[in-house]
Length: 86
Image (cartoon, rainbow, N blue to C red; front, top):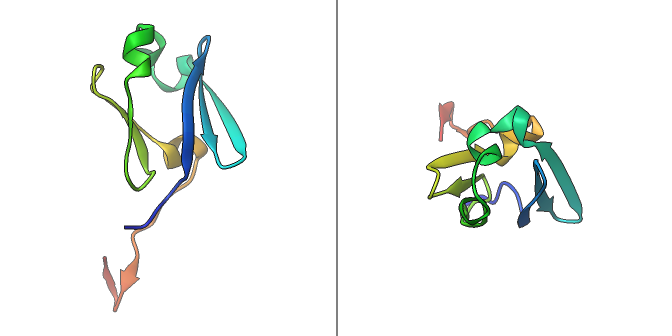
């Protein structure tokens, strides 16, 4: 399985989502990306799962998913093999 992102940590600081990818920590204002996370309780925010491929983060108590690539503005294209999408 291809590893898209190496998510080391997911935390919150006030109304910001912080995602540590390798040596860099990226800050995202919740008001701009996800109203559910903005209004979530600390318990709801703390319970998350990172996909094995590092593609996204899921908050099961909120039924909310965020794509790391989407947050970073990266488009992941499917691999092409022999003229067909894999």
